[in-house]
Length: 311
Image: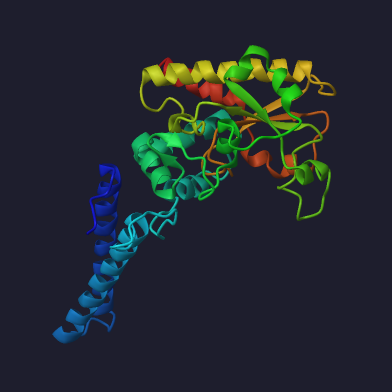
């Protein structure tokens, strides 16, 4: 016998999803009904169209129950997510604001996110996609969130101990991560298969946040909850800047030209907060390719401080 969903939020989202699907299918049936130039359609055909729409909704529901709660008599729940789990908010941001490299564009992303339902709506999207469970980023492999896994210590990066030590006391809160070896190796490559994938420069690192609370997963959502969270977000980003400058000053070969960039949800490839640290004295083709979404840390601070002070 099937049991109720373990979290009411998932049950609510399922009900809303099914209602939306049913409404859309009914509209589609209406369109089919009047497709023949407005000529009447026999009631039998109309009834059949509605029956088909209802059957599709029922099939979607059956798929959801089977994949989320297991087949009756077998139990269990796997990591598969039904087709309904789509990144609607992420896709909307990406399409509406294709370039996010200035404070005004970052502010526009946050304004759009509020219009789309704010933090609660985004949390629902991340939960449906499997990236968040019980308020924290997931660290499994389905879906894979590599930076969350590194921050949690599930995945280690041998050889990074010395660089991590260069964060000093900030290392208790933040972590330095490196790119894949092949991505670092091809930082200067102009080959199409590497541009946009390789490291942004000869020296390119990621600063991660050890705290896996979902509310810190991306700068798009930082401090959206209330004034207290906004104040904490400003303090955290300020601390990341201080830690990044300390890291670069203590790590051999790094110049004083340090670039610090975030990628906003809608343009970020990983759903865990990471600050790109790039030595601007040795950038490569990928840096230029990603310039459209390299949002400077100072731009983020400008917007968050403005919101905090009611600007």
